[in-house]
Amino acid sequence: MIGHLQRNKVKYIIDKVALIHSVDSIRLAETIEKEAAKHNITANILIEVNVAKEESKFGLMPEELDELIDKIKDFNHIQVKGLMTIAPFVENPETNREIFRSLRKLSVDISNKNVDNVNVSILSMGMTNDYTVAVEEGATMVRVGTGIFGARNYAQV
Image (cartoon, rainbow, N blue to C red; front, side):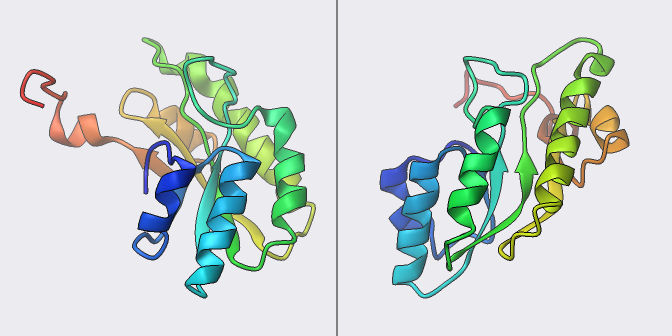
């Protein structure tokens, strides 16, 4: 499940997805835990971090990440598989290098906490215009739809 997930939609997708890419709040994590428990499943998630601190984007602020991890460590039906961020669209991909580097550093910091249900093996960062820099900084998952399918034609949508 890629994209912002509203809490009231969790019950509809919880048993239909392999990985929720965009957990961006404690309240959403609590809802996922509750709904996963009802189905007796473990929900695999990525925590979305707004490293660039853009007001137009979803995601936890980096300084809120520890609080969410402290909450999730007590959950029995959530497994954190990694972190994700969406960097700003820029002409020069090098501009986003520090954002990708910061997410990787956050992943190392979280891994060092040795929390049982937190295994930060996925770093989802980088899109068609900057994925090469993201991979250089440790990305294990990239979003390159435009590179594969071409630009969207919003007039047809």
